[in-house]
Image (cartoon, rainbow, N blue to C red; front, side, top):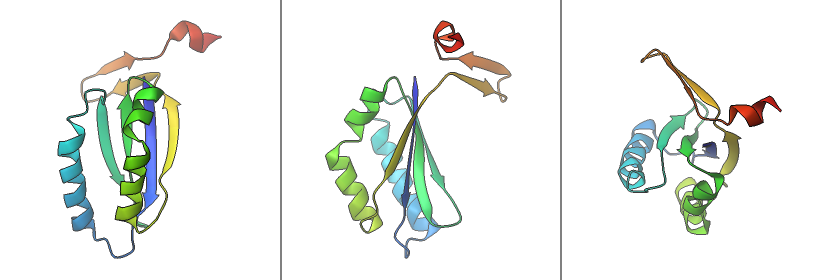
Length: 111
């Protein structure tokens, strides 16, 4: 499993309510992607937005975040490039359900 973190600088005039409405609309579109495991929308106090995605593979993430997607981000943000980072999703501490869920190959991780 892969965690992909995408961040970008929003256009200065974008309000939190406008960003929320846009994210809500996008969420309904993203759930149609059969490869997406989960997407979490994020925002900071400095006008930066983004998302944390969980994918089965880096290739699945790259298929979803192609050139057409990049152009859409540029249009929505006033020309600000999205920044993308990929991480191996090894395990999760699910405090709400009292579970530790392992995703990574533990044999590989020990090497």
